[in-house]
Amino acid sequence: MQRGKAANWLERLHPGLFGISLGLLSLSFTWGKYAYVTNIPTQLMEMTFLGLGVVILCLLTLLWSIKAVLHPSAIKEKFLNPVLGPMMAYLPISTLLALALILPRFPEYELLGFTLTILALMIQVIIAWRVVHLLSMGNIPTDQVTPALYLPIVPGGLVGGAALNAIGYPGFRYLVWGMGLGGWALLEMRILHRLFAGPLPPPLRFGQTFQWMPS
Image (cartoon, rainbow, N blue to C red; front, side, top):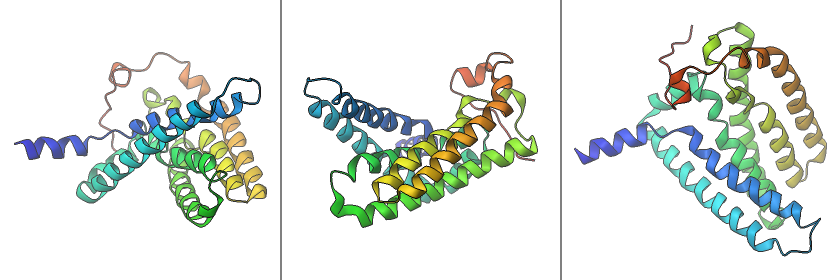
């Protein structure tokens, strides 16, 4: 009985949990920049948030790796869902931000950082391609258009550029940044008016998901 509950909990593990690590890593980045405009020591706060963010990111990545082995159908179901699918971009975005913050401090791990950056960018591109496909084909119901659609394209492009700069590819950084900004503009034209059409349906407001089948 307990084993069944544990398996069910792992199967339902939400991709939005990676937003916790992304938020902590963003706070670390903010404290690092704050040091340029204040005389207050900020290194302790910066490193605290960085450490917490990396620990949570590693823990969630481990759990999702186990989930991918034990429940691959659950991963596929979330990927195909127009609400949860884009939220899976939290994983590569958090990884890219962590690399952008860590590699300047530890340049000796550049090779590992390069490998993880390319892997994270590949995952992000797959998720972004899925979002672009759904929007271009008109396969997303109006009541399932959410701000999560911005995740793989806009933050993914901006943070991806920062990670590429950290591994020594500033030229590609500007290219990815430009793609993120361009995607932002295109998304505004495509879905912004739909986001203001009305409130989100109750199942989305309360953290549930619709049963959705791709066409």
